[in-house]
Image (cartoon, rainbow, N blue to C red; front, side):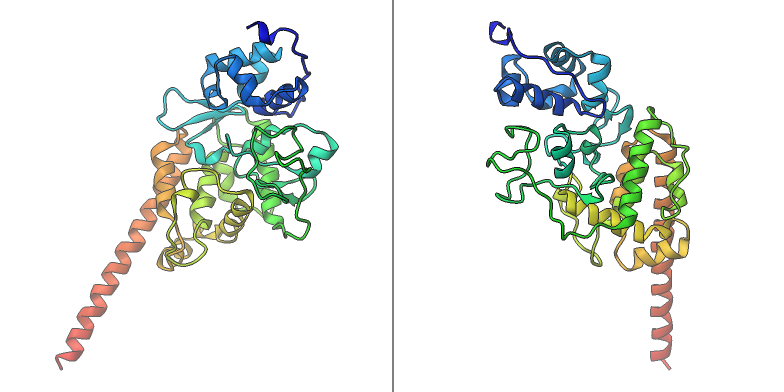
Length: 323
């Protein structure tokens, strides 16, 4: 451990993420994050273990009380669950982990990575009202925690945003709601705060994780019966893709207020039922599980009604042909 002696400490920012502080600490000491962690015998993904997170806190000179909530921690009682920012997440889809995103303008103003950026559903910077970036605008490489500085790509260019990219106002409202819940509700309880008028009322009964999965099920299919590949359900999607999925989900949100609207969405092949099945199976929150189960029941009833109607129509056709 002699190579760790003499490293310059940093004061963490109030809204900074754990990996962001580790990256900034490494940069301050002329190292890459991977090299710094190797000195401790760790990797970025190993901080999913609380013991390793405590080791990192000691190196960074910060408290575990501050750091651990800002690192995605595996839930010991769940096969795929995590804890982050005091909230429970049913699977890795909800958190960006080793696929970071950033707001270039925030990094110019204050060069540190915000903890809220590690939430997949936050695809927009609510301060600057621009889409997050997940890749360098110049070299097209995906963002990495191994970049030389918070606002600089491995290619040496400063991150820039695409000013011509439209941002859906409803997605901005959604991101504000997520930020509010994760600041004010440090638990797995459903949030209580009032919703923006542009957001569906059913969000208020769900956790952020549950709400995100519900919108994903509503919006992940852009076209009827579109195949949903692993890149959209196993790992966090690119920020722009996430923005578009959430925007579509919000535009179809009335499907959860009306059984007829949901039946229409199912009939059109636009609803991704497997997303709700995953939430019902993996969520640690009873309200989220109950909501997902109720939606799945409506979907099954819709499919059953459609099948009965099809058989009835076939029978009528046979009767007509027999005359």
